Length: 151
Image (cartoon, rainbow, N blue to C red):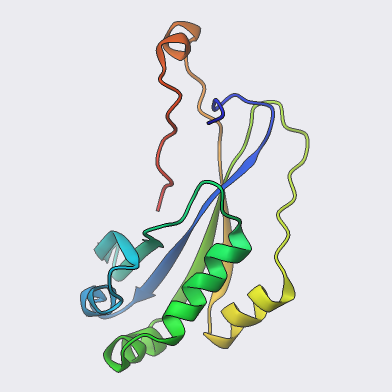
C-alpha cells in the first residue's frame, strides 16, 4: 500500500449513501450480505443509510464497483425498493485520496456506468480527502496501513 504522502492521488472506494425523511434501517437490512453497513440512523435532521460492498476497495476500479452495486440494487426486495424510491437522495460517492505532490488525477467512468446510476435515480458524488501528514518519526513506525474509506 502507498504511504499517504505518496506522489499519486488515488481512488479509494465507492460508498452508497441514501437519505430520507423516514428510517432506512429496513432498507439497509434488506440488501443482504453483499453490503457492509457503515452507518444507518439519523444524519442531522434526516435519516441515512451509508453502505459499501463487502468485497470492494483496493484493486478494483470505480466502474466495476458501481456496476456491481447497481446490479445488486436492481435485485433489491420490494420492501427496500419502496424506501429507495421514496428517498430524496441516492448517491454513489466516489472516494479519492489526494497526494501531497500530485499534479493531476483523472477518474473516468464509462457511459454504461453512468446510465446504470441514472436508471436507478441516483447521482454521482466525488469526495476528495486531503492527504494525511504525519511526523517523520511516526511515519517510520507505521505498518503501512491506510485509514478506512470515510462514509
